[in-house]
Amino acid sequence: MTTVDLEALETKVKRMYRLVAEQPHGVYHFEMGRSLAERLGYAPDLLDAVPSGAVESFAGVGYVFGLAQLVAGERVVDLGSGSGMDACCAAHLVGPTGSVVGVDFTPQQLDRARRLAEAGGLDNLEFREGRIEQIPAVDDAFDCVISNGVVNLSPDKDRVFAEAFRVLCSGGRLAIADIVTERQLADSIVADAELWAACIGGAAQEDTYLHAIEAAGFVVTAMWHNPYEFVSERARDASLRYGVKSVTLLAVRP
Image 1 (cartoon, rainbow, N blue to C red):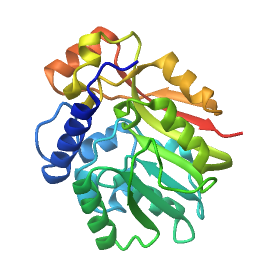
Image 2 (image 1 turned 60 degrees about the vertical axis):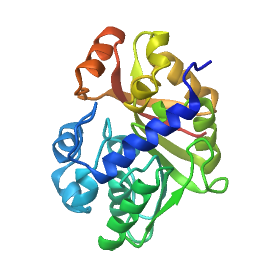
Image 3 (image 1 turned 180 degrees about the vertical axis):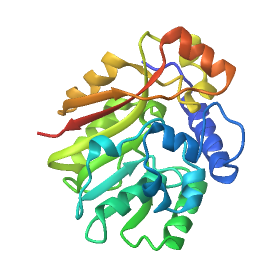
Image 4 (image 1 turned 135 degrees about the horizontal axis):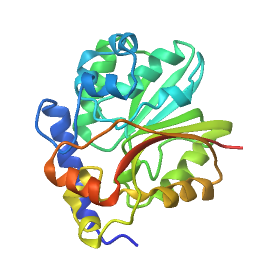
């Protein structure tokens, strides 16, 4: 049972990621931009292929495409697409015969992502307003679900994974980078909407997180840890105390 105030959480998350969209060079609990993306594993030529404005607003916690292994013609959905860097990368990787849908609930992020995709001529990419707990798509619509540093923000992770399973076709992949913990977070952290919005307060224990994915029907086939660190002293202290870390994993819908 979550003890965070859900209304306060949504307000904090929308405010923080509105600022990320409008002020990508601001000071946050987390790193942003191209240097972060390259350290996490994004190849420079892939970043060069997508709009620079999307890259400067990147606030992910890992590199999902190493495990996603997207190929031309595939259908992809990005849960919590933000300003659209991962969605733009996916659109480049699947090519004109493929398609990508980004889903986000922050209006400023959606506006920025749509402008950048249009300016970049990415005709195979669209952005839909919605929640990752209720993905705006029909059943069996995608070959791959990607998400980067977002599921931890949801107070209903079981629902997120159930929805990912629903929209994937048989044999589809779930490729996620996210924040997890080695130890259970203290109630004072879980109840802190600001730390939730900073990708810490909502982080699940690693074994609980994996169990939730498997309970939705997936088979987890690979996982690695990412060279990711928080920036602010408060976030770094919580990371050290509870073993907060970033992982990237691949799961398959049988």
